[in-house]
Length: 306
Ligand code: 2X7
Ligand code: FE2
Image (cartoon, rainbow, N blue to C red; front, side, top):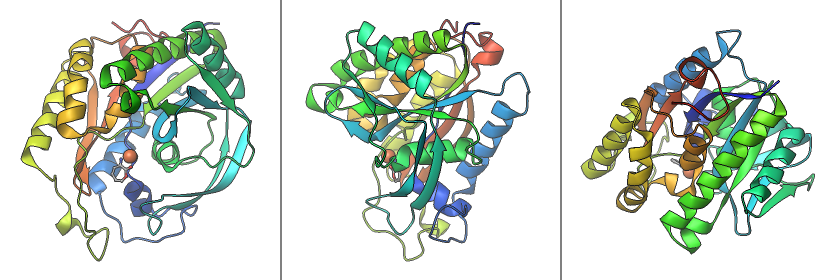
């Protein structure tokens, strides 16, 4: 049977959202915070998991905090366990993870990536530490971790070369991913683990979850985020892709690392409307949880979502 993409999601990964949720795997404790975004993830989970036919077999995540200089890497062992610590917020995120990987799909992505002319590599170091970006997006999407994942690194090309070169690479990686999913016979959800505008505070409030200190950093950044979300809500993903390089420069947007472009390319640049489950700021950065419901709008095809 041909595999299908069930949904693509813009799934931001501020570790604050995990900290605020107090899961047993995370060492620090909090009094809550950032409810708007956490309730947005709750709505996403309902949308992904309530319909029995929509439930995925595998969750793919592309994270900017696993950055690789040479090529695009995928996790290549069936199981990873360890402690992941955010290097900037070690007092918020010290997460004991125990994660199953769909190695068959990882290998297919590496193979199809090569067919696109990309350099790909399969990570088989058992001590490799999974980055906080991938873990946070996966935890917030599926806190039970009962669905295997495929984690994909962010190649450094937009930083070494240009936004445009980076986007081209990610479009190829997206096409490769769609073909790999089709060959796998699996039902997949794709997580683009990215914030939007990325100006942030440099001084943390005494209580990190003090919501009286949380707000967007700059009006211009907010306007950029709204412009991007408008295109998503109107189904203009081709236009969105064309505007991303400027968004990256003007709003220091984390989409520069490529996850959103990878995901939209895998979905073949849908022209149906995306659903914004939430928008909110974390340390001043803009974050939105946005779902492209491929299952409903494109019959869950791998790519081909018009
Ligand atoms: O990695 C992040 C992020 N992207 C946004 C906000 C806060 C912290 O970490
Ligand atoms: Fe980040």
